[in-house]
Amino acid sequence: MARSIDPLDFLDIERLLSDEERAIRDAVRQFVSERIVPEVGEWFERGEFPRDVANGLAGLGLLGMHLEGYGLPGTSAVSYGLACMELEYGDSGFRSFVSVQGSLCMFPIRAFGSEEQKERWLPPMSRGEVIGCFGLTEPDFGSDPSGMRTSAKRDGDEWVLNGTKTWITNGGIADLAVIWAKTDDGIRGFLVPTDTPGFSAKDIHRKLSLRASVTSELTLDDVHVPEDAVLPGVTGLKGPLSCLTEARYGIVWGAMGAARACFQSALEYATTRVQWGSPIGAFQLTQRKLADMAVELNKGTLLAVHLGRMKDEGRLLPQHVSMGKLNNVREALAIAREARGILGASGITLEYPVIRHMNNLESVLTYEGTNEIHTLIVGEALTGLRAYE
Image (cartoon, rainbow, N blue to C red; front, top):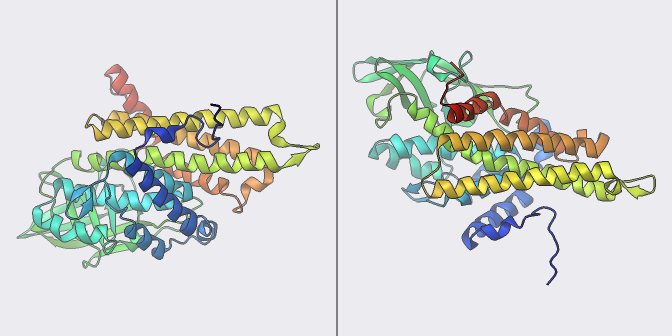
């Protein structure tokens, strides 16, 4: 029996998903369609992150959805990935919010925190009552976090933190900061309520990317925290790097959401925009562009599904995630740029999602491991030779 091809799911990847995974995806897709897509252009233009939408994401159970226990949903890695893909179809800022909350803040508490820390923080964070941020990057140390200058010194039964963190998503709206600092024993993680004296956050403005997202600089000036603020389960870079691996996994999926939005916009435009008496989609060069975009969109989505299955089976390594982020963000950005060209002058306006996604993806290409760093991680896995030190 003949069956038509869905241009947005050319390889019928839908059939690889379980009923539960499709139900979660569809719920997030509906939320994005109703609550984000109609207004995100305005939020991007104004540089505004709407807190009511963040509350809605919590209501859907998306905050820490892939973690177990303490009232958390414990969904599959594939379900979490699908949620990230649908969120980034709306805008990278909303996937970033969910990723920071669940993978960069709740994950280290779940993985390395004490029982008391888990009970105190995880339930309200899952409900969106406590917003978190992740303080690792510093003004002079991004790709090389081992050089961080933020320090934590013992003072009796307390710790005193000093330093600066920058490019921190959610920093200006956070209630809790997971701060990584150097101690005499190595790098440790600290749970710092943002109302602690000496802690301040200053939002970074004049961004042309991730405008519907809060990005901040954090300053810690003799911030005193008790002994029970330390994450007891990890010392060294293993802690923050494992968090980044969790977050990068979500990017592998999210980038394909942005790519799908750009491809869909270009396809619709190409079949309705008429020049020389024909839709521009009837011209060979336009069809080549659309075909190339569809190929990379489907390949990237298949890669995300495969990595998700590996993660659910406990076989996923950080190097696998690096390959996924390297490929999918790079190809999503290429799709966005090609779509911008198909739309012509319309492609630079916020009436269409393409330029917004393209600008956002320029940040996604850089954060949580630059394109170059992930290239060298894959290179090291292939050769056994370390090239970035």
